[in-house]
Image (tube, rainbow, N blue to C red; front, side):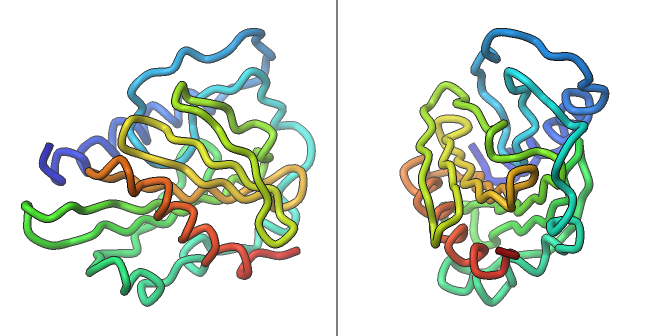
Length: 189
């Protein structure tokens, strides 16, 4: 798949995310059905979505584009960006790696979810690893065979999603976790 094709998958997912997350006011039992979900922010439905309480406090003042700077990406190549978006309850900042079509590339999305805590992150059918980084709750979730999301809690009711969309499945979670380590010290305690 060409990187242009991968990037083209962002737009439909953002539209889908807006539909999935807007208007979530009821609780549904069961688990979401895993499928091939284009990478960006975590907009997949979870078993419960309580958007009425918590969140928004400390995270509301954070600009997602201050969490990963273009200089932080220098070791990974050359990038376009940042570009910003607001989709389905998250405020995002996106970077796209540039280079020839023959080189493996990735896109990065850093999204703040002011009203969705880390407890709402679920397995997308490829596993989920809960952890901790500098005393902060984390979760690593492959979102497809090639993409991965590393999530950092900001208190109980909000979080940051670091999402890598890649042509190299083996590196997606590794890079997401490395960039999560860049983001963590820039978050409020």
